[in-house]
Image 1 (cartoon, protein in one colour):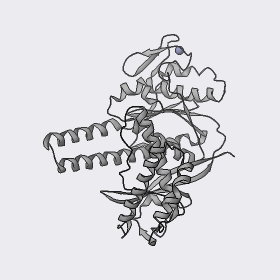
Image 2 (image 1 turned 30 degrees about the vertical axis):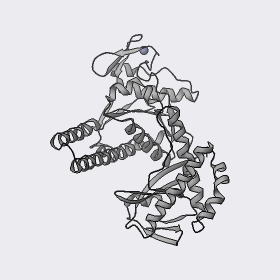
Image 3 (image 1 turned 90 degrees about the horizontal axis):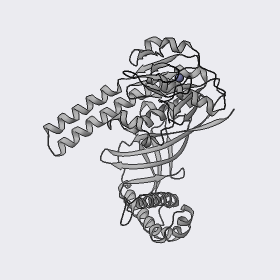
Image 4 (image 1 turned 120 degrees about the horizontal axis):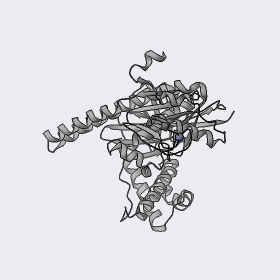
Length: 393
Ligand SMILES: [Zn+2]
């Protein structure tokens, strides 16, 4: 069976900042900045070349520092310099690139994670340090995952370790495809048996609620630390709330589609060019949300052995899924085909076309879709996200 790799990043918050860590942060920053300057002056974008040319002198200057810090610093410097070059070409950067953050990149020689014990061991110039972190429920799921790169990050909220975990999963041969259309206020699912399920998410209400809350704060408190703190607090609450919603939604989508073996989603890489989304989102809903929800659906699906495919989103809401004719709006959220007269909810059309596109991608001949669709008016079965558990157990 073919296998795929799933990668997920988890955050661990350290209980205390041990002595010596502050110095390590500034030492590392110094080294990365030295390397960035070197890369900048000699126009080096290759990690291997940078390491080859700078390693010896750095080793001599910092003899107590475990050598892998120099390797990871070279990696960070190369990627910072590369992204600086990209921004510069677009006219968005000038001067010299500088690394100002308190971030240390770690590889598997520099740290060992002990999930059960709740600590990491970190190699430092003064020997091995044991750093305890706050346990969290979701850490448990990574028990059998492979530990990859990690980053130590210091910000006003404390010191965190971000760890990339990976795992191989076996992906089965799909029996059929399910099309999933993500919208601001609903998710519409097109099943292979011709049924449509729509989950009402109320995401817009949540966002509007927080939007109004933030505006009230901005009106009441004009400036200062208090204002910033309050805005940040509600921003975080909104993100947490949406995150919870996305996990719940993704679980439901995977549950509904599991027996078919494959989920098709829209490829939103070039979402900037998609008029449909920008018009619909009205600037308030960020593209971030879609990608976030998609990535949660993707890894949860893969963990269950489902295949996930991405289709080109072009014209998924302007072509008739039955005859391929042009469809135009005909009332509130309803689309009608100017060729064959087919009429349906626009989200039904979207999810249906996504499913058809995935089938075509595989070279599966798409049969003319069944006529009952016409008489049913393409009405989906609607469920509320909050009551869905009572319907599906
Ligand atoms: Zn038609």
